Length: 124
Image: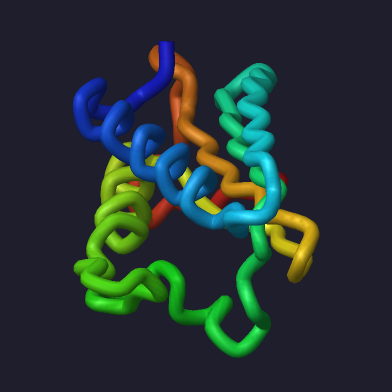
């Protein structure tokens, strides 16, 4: 069990899957891989696509509210995803290669695993 709102995390993962499918050019068959990893204190979900990748010029903007590359897109999906994941104490990030594909990663703390207190210094 991971920390986080079940519905919100479900919507975030659904949004990432839809984005992955939509990122694949029309002349390419979509291949979406979903992987789940766990360690002693977190669960990590990876959603990988074989899409067009994210151009370097916009990589710093993908989590900003109102930024979208889709015609008619609101630009709220990834901004809400980032806020929701971080609110649960997790992280979200991506790795991308243009014309090869993108992986989005969501890491959430496992339930019942004590974490640092707000403002507490932690050494890893």
